[in-house]
Each structure stands twice: as C-alpha cells, then as structure tokens.
Amino acid sequence: MDADCLFRKYWLSFLLCLLCACDAMQAVVAAEKKDDKKPSAIDISAKLVLYLEFEQPTSEVALIEGVKVECELYYRVPNRNEYRPKITRVVGTGFLLESQVLHYVVTAKHLAKSSRSGRYWISPVDGEIASGTFEEVQAKLPGARWFFHEYADIAVHPVLLPRGGKFKVMNKNTLSAEPPELLTQVCIPGFPHTLGKDNVKLGPLVTRSEVASWPAILPNNPLTKVIFLNDRLAQGYSGAPVYSFRPPPSYGPFTKYTMEIVGIQSGVYVFAGPGTGTLVTKDELSYIIPTSYLIDLLDSKDVQDFEKDLLTRIQQRKEKTQP
Image 1 (cartoon, rainbow, N blue to C red):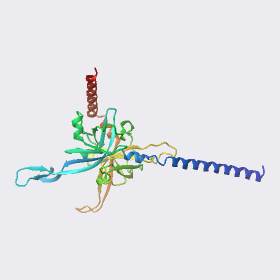
Image 2: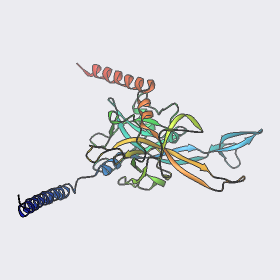
Image 3: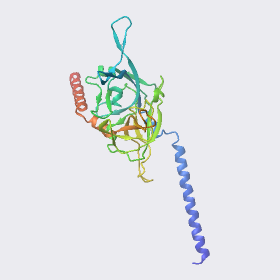
Image 4: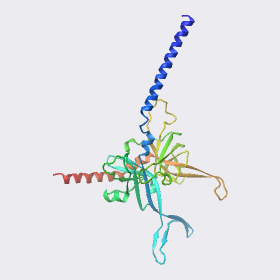
C-alpha cells in the first residue's frame, strides 16, 4: 500500500471518529436539556429536613464550696418568694426517617435531651408547611417519647404525618454503616440561625464541606467516634443530615454512585492554640456522628419494644372493630 492510500485511510478513520464524537456530544446536550426541569439530588435532599425549636432551661457553671457545678438559672418574682426558670430557645435541624412501623424525626441528642418542650415544621412536596409539637404526638401515640443513643449525640422521636400530605422521607434500609472515605464531598441542608424558615414553606440553606478524618474519638467522649469535616458549620445545623453528593476519590468515572446519608451534624470542636493563660489562636472544625450509631439506636431494645407494643395495639384495635 502506497503512502497516499495509507494517508487517506487514516484520514477517513479520523473523520469518522470525529463525527461519532460530535453525535455523542449532541446526544448528551439533548439529554441535559431534556432533564433541565428535573430536580437534582441535592434539591430532593433539601426537602427531607425539618426545622426544630426547643425550650431548654438556661444553665451556668458556678463554683459552690470549691466545686464547679452546672446550675439552672431562675428568675425571682419581685416582692414574692416565687421563682421561675430562665428558658432559652434553641433551634436545630432534623430529618424524616421511616421504619417498617412508623416515621421518626432524627436529630442531635443535645437539642432534645434537657428540653421542656419542642416543636417541628415539615415541608411537604406540595402545599404549605405542617407543624406540631412532640407533646401532641406523645398524647396521641401511647409510648411515644424521645429515644436517645446511650453515648452518641443522636435522638429519634415518633411523628404522625398529616393525612393526605406527601413528604420526602429516608428509609432505614438505605442507611450505610460504612464510614465515608477521606475527602468525600458532602452537603448539609439546615437552618443556621433560623434562616430558611418562614410561615409558607421551608427553604433550608445548603452548605458543603469535605470529610477530613476517619472515625476518631473526642477527648471529652471516649465512648463515641466522630468524623471531622474541613469546615465549621454555623449554629442551627445541629441534627442535620450530612449527604455525600459526589463520588469519593477512589470511585472511577464509570462507577454508578448515588447520594446517601453518611452522618448527622453534631457539634464544633475547638483546637486551642498556644498562649499563657488566655486563648491566643484557635481552629474550629465541625464533626458528625456516623450513621452506624443511628442504625444502632433504631435497632435498640427500647425502640424495638415500642414498635412491637404499637403493632400489638393496632392489631387489638382492628380485632375490636371487626364484626
């Protein structure tokens, strides 16, 4: 074969490959235009979160007989020997999770542990937001209460969703017990400083970060492992679900990947810098509770006994109503 024929052969092959590539690009662009109106995974995840408010007694550490003691603060009514507790409003974030029996609100334990009362706001797929108090749920649902993990900063409470409404919920079976890889990018929808909550609908603020550590032990809680993020999240994100929204570094370009909850936002750890008696420098990183602790809580004896008792009550009620 002479040089001219060989050149024409490879030139035609190159043009054919170029035309195929153009067709493929046009197909991708057409598919993207077709899916323009479809909500992204992050848009869907933002509809899962709840706005939460709790009333907690105000406390302060005082030195009593040489011992530091955390004391609740009370107001004294003028000219009367009557005292009333000083109440602080605490806001946070939660999300809906369904089991085989009912739905739960999932949030951080430190929000609900010492609260006198709590209220939630849920945004349905369509329509205005629905709200209620956890005390109302407890009155309607026998045995309903806050269930706390023994060590981890996670709590769940049963919730009764309004009939006829459509709500985005996570399924217990979709939770992964495996921790995320380092530098996995995550997004966190929540309500920092009450932003994103109004009387019509919920519009959580979504921020993003990266996984900065493997599960590690905090000095003040050696019984629980946490995962550090590369950023400090604002107050109000406590209890928010933490989603991995991009594949971790080890995933290849053709690996199928879906968003999943990798943890629940818990708190901020302060790394004190050098100084002499005063704090000169400090670094702050947020940390999350791995979802494995949430799975442990849902599988705990207290939660399982509550669900079994609830199923027994439902069955007994059905038997009474049957002719």
